[in-house]
Image 1 (cartoon, rainbow, N blue to C red):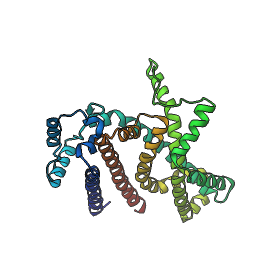
Image 2: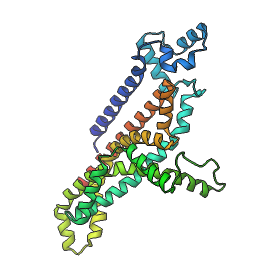
Image 3: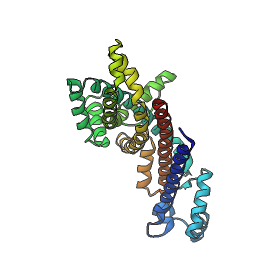
Image 4: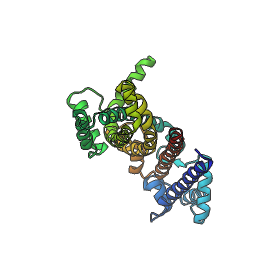
Amino acid sequence: MSNNSKWRQTLKFAAAFILLLLVNFMLPRLLPGDPLLVFYGEEAVTDFTPAAREALIVKMHLNAPLGEQFIKYIAGVVCLDFGYSYHHGRQVLDLILDFAPWTMALTGLTLIFSTLLAAFASLRGAWDEGGRFDRGTISFFMILNCIPPFILAMLLLRTFAITFDFFPLSGGCSIFLPQTACGRLADLAWHAVLPVASLMLHEVPNQFLLLRAEALRWKGKPFVSVFLAKGIHPRTIKYKHLLLCITPAVFARVGKSVAALMGGAMFVEIVFTYPGLGLLVFESLQTHDYPTVQGVMLTIGSCTLLFNFMADLVNDSLLHRISS
């Protein structure tokens, strides 16, 4: 990967991050009404005296020009100061640090399992193009692709948690966790099965269709015929050589997958009352806790941009190695 390409990717990431900061800064300030009511809601500031209200406005720089407010906002973001949540009585950063690991675990597990499943299905289907497995997977994934993740979550909840009582209804862990580390890990995994399955069923079709097309493209290359003529087992060609060839497409899709999974996870967490950032945003919107909403949106947007940036760098490096 050339230095010019790295600089272009870095400049794109910086421009997108600045735009994210600008949008996150402007949205609550474009709402009409008292700025304190906009940021904290009527319930939080009802008992404030006029002096306390004025002091809070000065502290938040809401009486300063918009340009100065933006500079103060950037300085706060650099110092990881996302504001204070009066509804929770805590710093927003502390809330994010408490809830983010749950969302990261949910999206991370989904990304790993969905990528492995999509890669396996796409390679097998492309190798036997038009066969029973290929037709069946295409039909199944096309149907799944039309169903939103929160609908899938409700169907899985209704079927496996309510009707058959195989999995817990809600939460990220039991009220009384087992004493052993293995027991606690098993309990966490048991609660994560349905949320992860909901996101997987939504994400695998998108990955499968892309990777299948890429596998078909590489399957038609002369080296496949050469390997077959040399007596190399088709399984080795499929899951070693073709897998290596479609790896850049896998990493190219990772960035988009992270963005889709972050958005889908927010709805899935609400359905399962899973203690992640999605549930935190939902509760904060109900209480008009906009500093928390701002902080979570900035965190999710920044993570998505960072994953896209890293995936582009890895993808360009892999393409350069394969082409050379």
